[in-house]
Amino acid sequence: MAGPYVHAALFCEKVLVEPDSTLSAIRIVDKVNVPYEPTIAMPAPISLFLLVSLRFGDTRPKRIEIELENPVGERSLVLGAAAPQDQGGANIYGQINLSFARAGDYWFRVLADGVEHNRTMLTVEVQRPAATPPSGGTQP
Image (cartoon, rainbow, N blue to C red; front, top):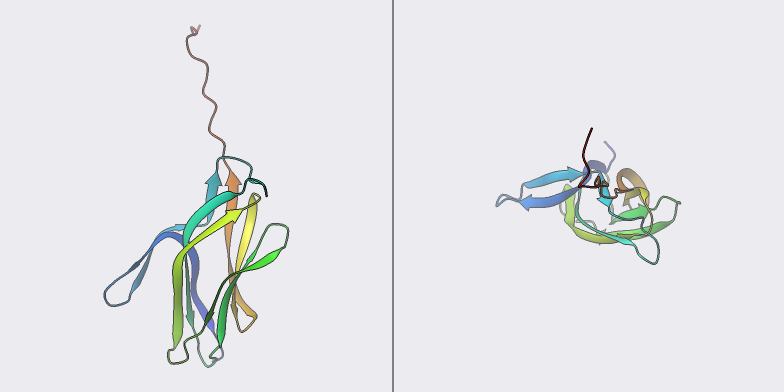
């Protein structure tokens, strides 16, 4: 058995941590709607929880990273942490606040010691408010 293995990699509105350390992901999210076309000058701020759960198997990585790839292929590090060496895995979770400069699909890659083991996608979509029909006229 090699590893590490990704048990979960997702975005949600909230992560609950029970007294026995059990995690619950509330309202799993794979798409967010923004009211305008985001740009570099006016990015769309988005705040979500990220939950990544790993089981190490026979491999004990030294470092775990989450890397973001934007719709045009540019990559940046979102999170980096030392992997616990005294456990059979790791649960990484917390609220992340990001600003997106364009609509589209954003890939979040789960890396262990620089090797990709999984990825999850978050889509940023523009959804303008629906136009309201003019009032005051009569219908035939």
